[in-house]
Amino acid sequence: MIGIVSYGAYIPKYRIKPSQIAHAWGRDASEVENSLGVYEKAVASVDEDAITLSIESAYKALINGNIDPKNIGAITIGSESHPYAVKPSSTIVAGILGMGNDYLAADLEFACKAGTAGIQLMSGLVQSGKAKYVLAIGSDVAQSKPSDVLEYTAGSASAAFILGKKNIIAKLIDFTSFSSDTPDFWRKDNEKFPSHAGRFTGEPAYFAHVIGASEALLKKINLKPSNFKYAVFHMPNAKFPKTVSKKLGFSKEQMEPGFVVPYIGNPYSGSSMVGLAATLDIAKPKDKIFVCSYGSGAGADAFVFEVTPEIKAYQKSMKDTVTSQIKNKEYIDYSLIAKNILTKYRI
Image (cartoon, rainbow, N blue to C red; front, top):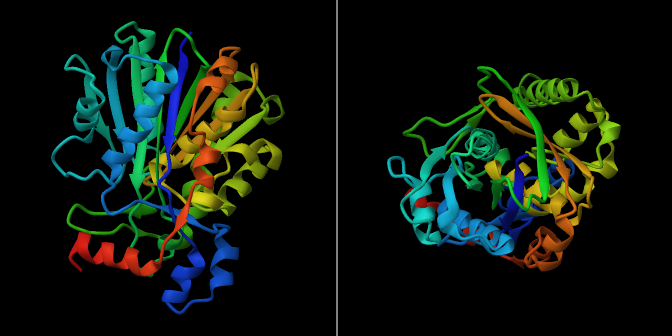
């Protein structure tokens, strides 16, 4: 039996409302908010990036689980905003955490599902006995072209999950993936911002892959949506996960604890993982949690977790829940974001 032994999430405290962005570009603010269902998003500070966000969430995971970083045998960081094109983020994070040198490190990239890909890949190291603990992180300072529709939702956050065989708070029951060459979202190496295929990102991309992975896993484990207490889906906006959950047969109540997109936006690789963290914050023993991430290009990873009695003591001792971080916020002006974009990308 393997599963989650600890986790941590980090959400930057700065927020901006899409209505303010819409106002800056002369667009109808109410129309933007109503169409996307996102009312504010988390914004990384000028001195924060995918690496610093990863350090914050991973450090919380180590503290919450009282785990010696030198016992972590592998680390992956899934992101589409790695600061370096050629220089691993994972070794920087491992060095700052104090993991020593005896570990496997890898940076992953698969749009918004790179973080969950790490959970799948490294679960095998734990199951085979090659590593006592492994650390999978999803972290993004989401990129968006100024005035593009992505700018209203692209957020910043990170989540880190430590897997192991002892003191498990949520068993990893099973997982599956659904992948294809569907170019709904891309960014070439020499481009500053990602491009997307507009409405094409819906039916043939997000919905086809999330439904494909979810239905395959439900069939594989012979369970129905009604067998689950909670469900978490990748949240590029508020409408897509609501629609896909309804199509699959999950209820609004099952999604509610992990439905963080209206408050932090879409932190890409951190989206579904922060949603899972928020769900674990309030879950009880024997609760089953269904999770399905999505990454453009395109693919989806679906997971089933079952919460164990260990969660009770864990929740009592842990700090910085997702909800507490959502509430700890400070609004900033769009001019600060514009200035940061101009400086960072030399526009």
